[in-house]
Amino acid sequence: MTDDAATAEKPTTTPQTDDGVGDRQAPDKSPRTANQGDDKVTRRAEVSNLEIVHHYFDRAADRLEIADDIRAVLLSAYREVQVQVPVKLADGRIHVYSGYRVQHNGARGPYKGGMRYHPEVDLDEVRALASLMTWKTAIVNIPFGGAKGGINCPADKLETDELQKITRSFMSKIDKVLGPTRDIPAPDVNTNAQVMAWMMDEYGKTHGHTPACVTGKPIALEGSYGRESATGRGLVYMFREAAPQLGLKAEDTRVVIQGFGNVGAWAARIMQELGCRIVGISDANGSLHSEKGIDAAALHEHLRDGGTSNDFEGEGVESISAEELMELECEVFIPAALGGMIHADNADRLKCKLVIEGANSPTTPKADEILNDKGIFLIPDVMANAGGVVVSYFEWVQNLQHFRWDEREVNDKLGGIMRRAYRQVKERCADGVPPRVAAYEVGIERVVEAAQTRGYI
Ligand code: NAD
Image (cartoon, rainbow, N blue to C red; front, side, top):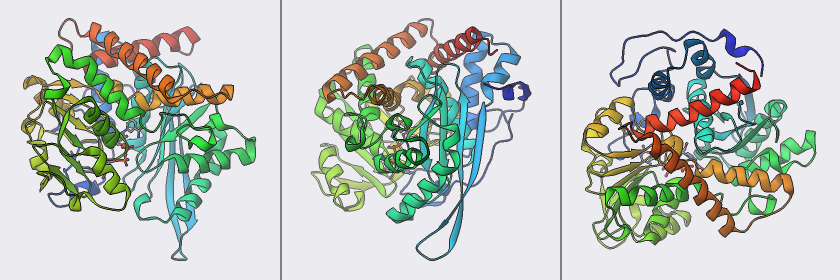
């Protein structure tokens, strides 16, 4: 690591915003397109993911009495890369997108984190998601640091060959800071195994065939069995750990899932296999409710075959508004869409016993307090949704050995790591510390120890 971090600003105490966080880094407040729709989608908080992550970091760092100079290192990123991605699209015009890769902290190993394609991607959001990865990899104790990247392109409106051009152009500009022992990207919102395959191929043009340079690849290109389902499956391992202490049995458990993409759809299907009833589901097109239970596997097939959530039919299934979805009586609520979806204006409406955060930063600090006051038990993103990066770690290990594990082995090993993380964090909660603070404490301690032992700080 270089001495970039030494120039970071010293944290100062600043007034709290409406959503309960300080304004230390003057975060980007660019309008969030998700807030401009009708009542079909949940409006997101006007608080940035960076503010959210820094707030939670500060709470744990205060309890750990981390000195200001060390905090400054941990709050800023080691390296931030922003590149221009000009691409000639099907309309014949050149469109210029911005591509980002932020490497937050590499004390515990190579940087690791997803690539997000979304018009709202900006440097602040990527910074926030990169630092979340640092704490996440430390909490589940896998040998990686934290990174994140993305392009501010409207992936859902682009043709496949346009996406390929954008991906290759981006990769060719940032490959120097990547590699199996440096930084290993993975899929995130609107990127998938195909995008990872293009990235690997582009990287290989300069560096030779290197499957371990990205994870989340297709099975045909040394991807790992179980990677696609890993984040959703990890959420279910969290449910299984928390259920006994909350007196929940799968067959009596009603589940609401906000966001039916990769994470939400897998979590829904596996929860359903466990015997839970999925009473509410939403995506960017609308929200569904059925007291009898929505067949998550049938809905997944319906969407895969080109249907939308609005035209899905099932026993007792009715369309509801996004706000009504958040008011459904249930035992478990899983936010699995985007950040800032549970905020000061809607947290009070949740009627569940347990929130398992599938999305990154779905809950603002103010909402976190409200849920805590309501006695809702919350398993935080930095632990709950780590299943994806854990199986990415398995994929990297398999790639380095050019050896493949079967799906059962992957799922069993994932279960072992998720259970261990849950129990280690739970031990920290013994004196009434909320799981989110306890999880950050575990992560921060491990990163500080690694950085100090290396002699970096
Ligand atoms: P995805 O693009 O596959 O799915 C996102 C889903 O959210 C889609 O169904 C979309 O329609 C829905 N959505 C978008 N806006 C919405 C709104 N306003 N209301 C309701 N639904 C809305 O993405 P994903 O990979 O499933 O990721 C979801 C979240 O989980 C993100 O926050 C991501 O960072 C996080 N995450 C993903 C992984 C992973 O392995 N994919 C790992 C860790 C965390």
